[in-house]
Image (cartoon, rainbow over all chains, first blue to last red; front, side, top):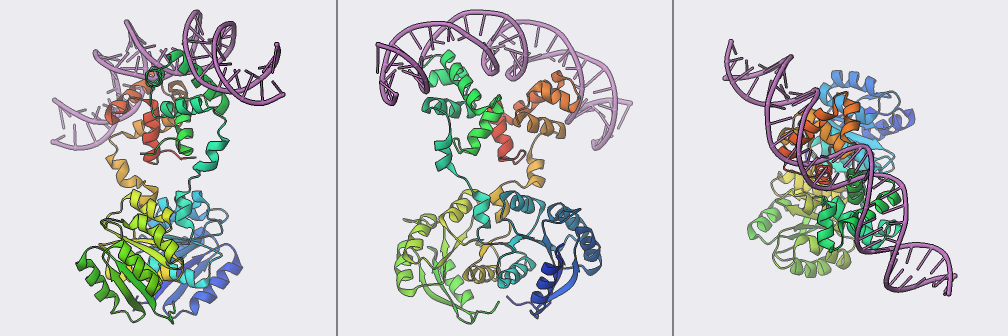
Length: 215
Length: 215
DNA sequence: AATGGCATACCCAGAAGTGGGTAGCTGCAT
DNA sequence: ATGCAGCTACCCACTTCTGGGTATGCCATT
């Protein structure tokens, strides 16, 4: 990994302590240069315009304009800059949102300094970096226990699956060799038990629980 | 990123050319040592037991025992080794499966050598590394082009989203301040264009495209 | 023996969706 | 300017779903 040029980093975090700490740490690395610090996303945008950083290391939780919404603005302001998100949370929402907005990486605040540096190097090189555990968070699915929590009887679950797969009452009746009227009765109980009135809702429910495949 | 000890890498790929090429490239880096090469996963397992590599760089497509199934065996044989998957495909299935099995990273074969080196360094350091584009593949929703591929008009997309979210024609009509009849017309075009006749199917479609949230 | 949960089956009236049309209006592009 | 695509709106006949019932046989628990 040969860096002939310094990596220009812009730091944005509304916690002064974090900001200073990061700056101090990063400046001990010869190939990294902190070109600016900001405690609000808007400030950071201005600074980015003038300093043209290689990497923008930005916190997610910030007042006024949060980091995730800010990504889009940075993409517009400095399209070449790589956005590396910094967060205390490994929540699926945040991570998904960051990736979707175009962040090049996502680092948790409680990782060792070396990892943050590694992340900066990686995204500066055009790669993506995600803290350990993050990819798992993206994929998290929990079928085992949910199946037990399901208040449905096995017959109802069976019917829910077919319903969610797009089968009509009549089709399900044929498949299960029962009357369509019976299917309707089951459908009623399912909706009642789950408190979901619509077919679309049932489909989403089934998908969430992993009862039916996603593709 | 100071590596005082050499990173011991085990290479597994059933293509001799790839294997030799990788070995040659990696050996030009002073801090990386190739401790073994294997063209089958089983061979690699044996080698791993004796050479205790830091990183196992393994192809996914291999005869007899594929790389993904092999991950589990490596985890058992050499728990400390980091598994870095190498693949020609950025298919969601492969990537998901790799991450779930416990791989520390996923690199595409067509990336520059430097990226492979960076990936090895990163996973050796306890991080995770995913080639550019891979996290997006995990989330399988790249709206820009997907939106373009969607044969729907913006209005239709809007209505599809509401439909999939479980709204009835009438509700959608209220929200969009148009006639329920118009909503039905749109619904017809959507189903026709997508070739999906059922609401459940539309919901699944919308979920797959990331048009609506999963939870 | 009895209670209750489950699966089965049916009735009914009203609401909603389906699939086939037609058609006016706007705006963009050839 | 002409035409086409998209959004709007409506008609009709038909099917399906909805939500409220009732009811019977089975089986396990009490």
